[in-house]
Length: 257
Image (cartoon, rainbow, N blue to C red; front, side, top):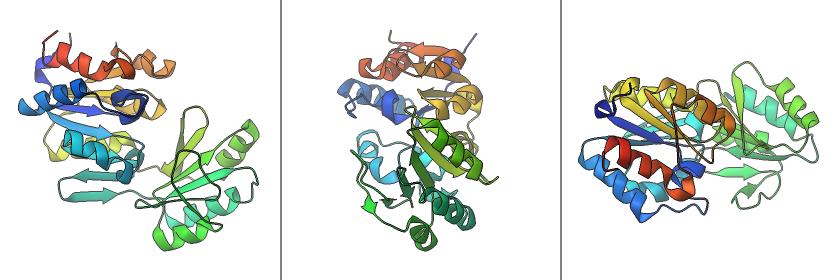
């Protein structure tokens, strides 16, 4: 029997989970999360987004901690830890990927995003030498927009042992250091805050949410999430567009349902 009265931390993914499809936060969701903070429940975000595109939501919610770029950057108060891709691995992979004519590649340096081609709905700096950018600015994350299984096989073959990838939206490969995972980032903050995983709820929708859903005391998928996430979750909340996260929290944690 799950004991919701022991919950001390709530961790939420953003896109397709806390945020509605139009990338907004409803007044209702913000009110529920603020009520949690009044009850001394910490609210943490764990997202694939980089810090620069997460800040606007921090102003609305005042998150207690942030795990961004899939765990490549972890922020708690004035503490900031980065788990970037080592330069040798980044240069090797980017040099290989840049030889594939049709492949759209994005390099996240943390503060900026660079790409070899324009990316729809994503502001980047166009560069013909992403490996060179990584050498001067570092690499937190490399993204490859896959449109065929053949290209997928090429990317998989060229990954060095210190790298791994997750797939988002069925086509976007997010390549990171093996030390950069959402769960590693979440666990490091829980340790600092003296909070236990079993006192934590995690909400998510996609492949990179599977590990934290398994590892936290209560794992919740939103109904619009992928089947693999819903299959391993302890609960399935309503969809992101129906404010599923907030409704679940209100019913089970704040017990107003």
